[in-house]
Structures are given as C-alpha cells and as structure tokens.
Image 1 (cartoon, one colour):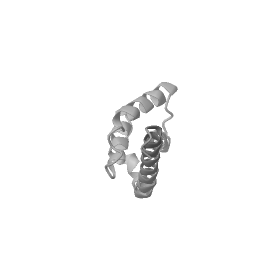
Image 2: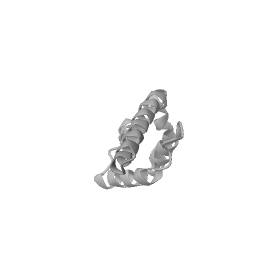
Image 3: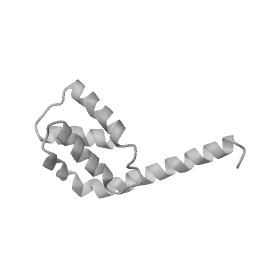
Length: 98
C-alpha cells in the first residue's frame, strides 16, 4: 500500500493526474515487484523509483520521499515481522504444536 500511495504522491507532486487505468496498472506492477523485498532494507525505494519511471514520470521526483523512507521502512519491517510471527503462531496452534 505504501508503494502505491507513494507513486500517486510522486505523480501529484509532478502535476500529473493518473487515470484509473494507470492506477490499476501501477498496483498490478507493484504487486508483482514487491514480493521479494520484505527482508531487504531500502529495496522498496528502488521499486518505487522503477515504478515511477515506468509510468513515464521523472524518477528524480521520488527522492522527495527518501528523507522519510528510513522511518517508514522501520515501521513496515516491524509490521511485517509481527504479521509473520502471528501467522506462525496460528499455524502452530492449528497443527497442535503449541
């Protein structure tokens, strides 16, 4: 969700309104490209830059987000770890291992 909102923010900061088709396409691209980046610090910013450039926007506009990306990355990582721990606990409880 962060990457899609950040892409729309960069488009709006550039003065470009994305059509509904472009927004849906962006979400599809981000769903495919963001699967393997959960454990890599800062990789989500690289995906944001590549997605913004695939929309035909200036990728340098995405660097406005870079200042807060480290804080956002820590929050995303903690939510991801908590979610993985909860999923592990639920599966272990379901299998009778707890």
